[in-house]
Figure 1 (cartoon, rainbow, N blue to C red):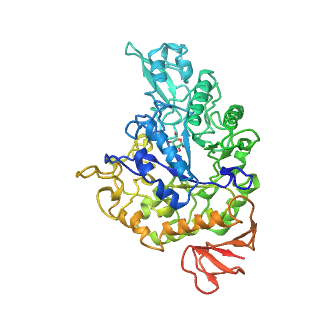
Figure 2 (figure 1 turned 180 degrees about the vertical axis):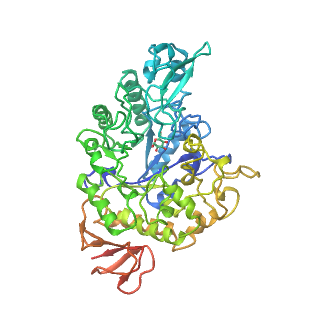
Length: 552
Ligand code: GLC
């Protein structure tokens, strides 16, 4: 919706749906599009402006669907194209837009074009769409049997896999920055940008409001494929990150987006890039005019538990751009759940999951209290924000998934050394009791299958049913915050002004956010009334791990 002349995505609240874990309509224990469609009322009541669907395309699931074997279809286990069209239509009736995931860095090894490449000879046009190199006949390495360079897969092990030729002999190697089931496209081959232009138009023509661009920093590689020294920081110059060629490509995509004026105003379709970085300055070239409308701002995932760290995170992001072009997030399907992360005082690192497993059940109350406070910080910041499904329920990370049930390729490729990301992907609890806690609808008299990832025994207390019945629940806090955010003239896009040295900021007209991330009570800033509090507040002071919205 265009609000007073601005574009809808500048202050949108977007809800990330991991479709296989959101809601299951056919009772097979795997979430699907009809399940999501049947729960649109829940999302409308929550008050979100859009949903971002992670991949729902046909896939062998080597990486939870980020291994796409057909970019223009719906995985039959998740529904049909008619279900997708119905979803877009019903969502629009609830004023909810749909954003889909675009996975341009790699496809699935089951994609017909990769199969054709395997069937074709080295040096063929079919192989040239991917990054094939080396092999004994092509003379790489001292014995001709080394991978073409020392790059490692982001999930562990070499980034190269060797194919077997038709005669049974070892052949060339292909590059995969992720799992071996995810061969990287060669974006310097003109077939590849042409293919993706068609894919982008295909989904825009079906009425999607935007695209989330997977691995937006990585799809071009240095054609010399040089070795790298050790593990590079995320923002260091690298032969496979942040190459300047990306920006020309994104300008062509932007032109496509802008050629789809919806509802009579430009900029109606967005694309948001996933660009991982160590310092937000890395995002600067992605934010140049004419490129992607938006990139994720991961600053709020990173700080440890202190007001100074949060202020730095917020300031460093806002120094670069507004929260409209770089929406805020506190979690997604790749990082441990916030309500568990905040049990630790440290900021997020790849080791956080190991520290949480070592912590067991300790500090659960602290984590939950802090997650409620951070929700109020997140939703008071200027610009747009993304909420990952289950954050509104305060779901914890599930740390005790048995090895046999784990699905993440990171677990497999590190031989269990890293537990991987399954703990934040456990199917949502909708009901207090029953198989899957209401995740799956029962078909006929039968009982549904167990959810595809096991839920903890106490999942029912986090369920939507339990939380709707408890006015102090996470869900009620999120609903109240989103309602206020929609109605309050100071919230949404704009700017903020810090008040004093604490985590307190004002937004005009008449709004103050105050958060206490320290161990002692903090005096409340001067105000007229408390609009919303993340926990009990009595007298004139704010208890530790608590945030409030005030009118001034
Ligand atoms: C992105 C996705 C992640 C996936 C990876 C490879 O980081 O968010 O889930 O594993 O790309 O596609």
